[in-house]
Image (cartoon, rainbow, N blue to C red; front, side, top):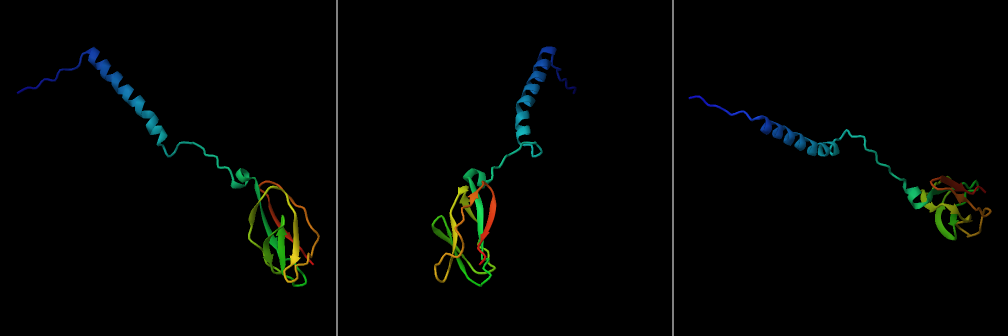
Length: 129
């Protein structure tokens, strides 16, 4: 028994080609969007820019063996023994008031400083007496 398959006429053939092209064109953006090799870039803004901060830490620079309390903008923020660093903390960029006190007596041991922090900067402050 012979089987015959009717070949499409010109009209049906062009219609099938047009539908195939339309289907491929519609799926192309999906393939491009899921491509792991695409060159899309993502900009990440550092937290210090977003929050307008700088990093500050303190060092116990006493040559006489005194442990110092650090007063930053009127609040005690750290106590540092000789040779010891505090952790970095984020502080607002701009002007501040800083001084060190003898932890045992509460007496101020160095002159008051007025640091003006630039955004995203990093500083270590100490008092050597």
